[in-house]
Length: 586
Image (tube, rainbow, N blue to C red; front, side):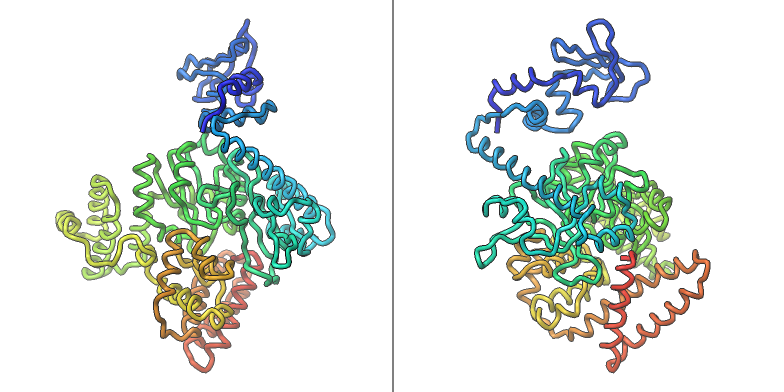
């Protein structure tokens, strides 16, 4: 794709280089030139010079040079075409492309973006002032969102009516569908995609609205808890990072980007003064995300739940580290706590978790050692062998050898023995890239629950809840099933790893008893919550209040093991988990 040369010239001539550069550094007129501190490197004495007559700049400190197009390309981290388009939008220049179809596609995208922008504005105004949005405003206040935050992130409210937005915008059927704002139902009538939800607008890296993420209010069961716009010409989940439009300046300045799981996690980091956080949009990190991130920073910190971070698709991450020159680390978050929750409970701990971030492989090995029994020779041998399996996945021989020495020290074994074992063929572990390999130990019940949800959906689906899944593959698999009308739709919309799991379990058999599987998941979820409760009790002024809750939970956990009481106990515990989540502890 290219832009007609004449239009490139028109954009260059229509753009005021002094005005553009002044958005990034303060300029002072010295003779015929404008001089200031270089925006591309740190300096105390101004060495950056702009010639407004010729439309050129040069830094005598670092050698950065070019015209207004190269300046925008480098400072906004765009390619040449993107920089010209950015300037054309500012200057009101209509571009022509060497490829006629691309020219038409761009006009179409701009038209659809305009529709999404109108929807963002309308939903936002409803949240601020509409009577129907009172409950939504109360929920956001409870979660710590004040009016300033609501306005900064352009949060909105989608009314419960079937076609409120459709009637407001009066779009054609094609525009409504192609923008992701709605669809035409089986009766041939326009219908809104989002209804009765708090909305988080999703912007591209240039701050243009392209999609929404929606959340049901607590107590509302009309559909899945979370819902994202469907993919379209504006919005591809595998390429989009929520919050990058706000984060990129701090990302570039710090040389680091923090990747979270949810929109509120990004906002939580911002509230704590860390403005370099972004989030994937209901998907795991993809190679396209890495391609985007490498334009901004050489280091990525994963701020996921510890179980999900530890079960990341590590082999692919290691490959992307090498391919794109990016180092991947993991923030040291407490077990079962997400960044949004930690930002509200202990902001200093969230900041420290990023400061203490460890390389992905180091994090996985340390996590393995914390769970292992290293008090005996046999336990240390098993831990060393398991750690070697993790090390074996890394493609760099030098990196592998560094970790061999660390494992040898930790397990009190001869590093030469470990090197010999590492050089030997890997133990038979099944296929290297399938979902089973990406599943961390202890998540077998989650896979079984997904299998049952696929094979016996009417019987099993009412018993399940998203809170019961923490696996890097199983949790998005549950989300895909919960938000889709058919299995084929769930597989089509899911990431490849998730789609593979759903496809595989669909052709397998299961003799498991659904209630037994659900009881195991509920028990695991409650035990995770118990760790958090015990931590809260140690900090509380009145620990007796927590003691009664803990005692009640442990009694219900005992009842989960008895056939006569398992059903009632599972129902009570799931209700407690739901209530705790709605109180802001999910």
